[in-house]
Image (cartoon, rainbow, N blue to C red):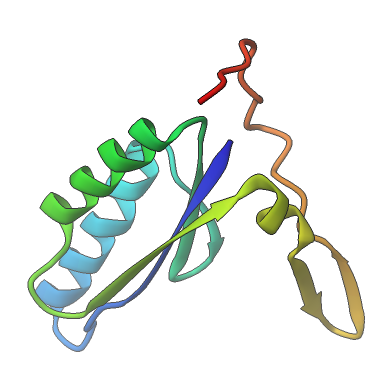
Length: 107
């Protein structure tokens, strides 16, 4: 199991740019990503093939202007992350709404 982490900076100076940025964020949500921070989205991927499929979808939906980066993380790397803020911190556990696969795959 792994995670795709999508981080982006898109221009939002004009109405058209804001619309493009909103369309990109909505496309991420429609593809099963959820928001970690305003310009950081992630999704669980059970295998490498699924990661490649979603990476190809991202290539097609990336706006012409701006910067989009994608990181691929293992479940262990994601779980070891921290969420810091306001003097408190908590482990960055996978969100409860995403179910782990019912079938285990070996590769």
